[in-house]
Length: 203
Image 1 (cartoon, rainbow, N blue to C red):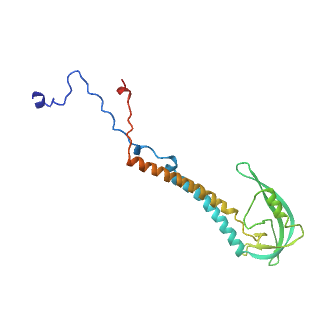
Image 2: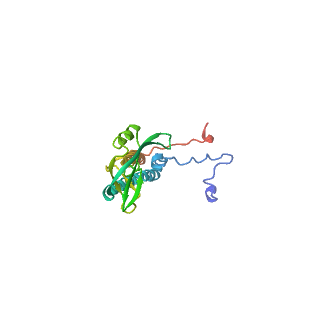
Image 3: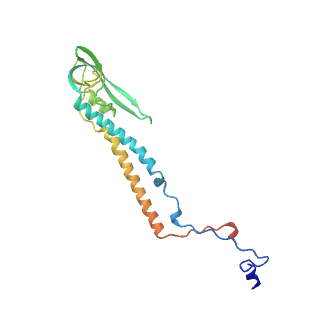
């Protein structure tokens, strides 16, 4: 009763130390998420850049196909230009130099397609096989800038690769994130305690 009066009821006996209070158990819901979940927004923004580039190129190509005006031209020379990529890969671009006249003024251009394209050497050779020096062809000229023109009046779907590949990557990433979220939801519904034993608690 004296111990209770002076507040000694909860005090440990003299010479006996109370065991350390163990930390609260962690549950699976406290585990860190998958890196794909953490960086989902950053990766999505990075892939969106490629989608924007692809759509921009495709839009520019469609506009030039329908808005630029046809005018007679004469082929001066043909050539194949090698293009080295950032990772060391080499692609090939067909080059056709031709001359045309707008409002009494002569212009020259070497653009073949509405947008700049490069691929395999066989592809470049197949494009050049359609042109030879001295040949009369039809060029398509920018009405507001007559110095800009192209020869091949055809739609190319190569720019859409910049759209399709990021979308596939984004879909795969979204699948990983959904799977991770399902696992997290299951872990939260059925938490599994994770006990951490300190060195002081070991016998």
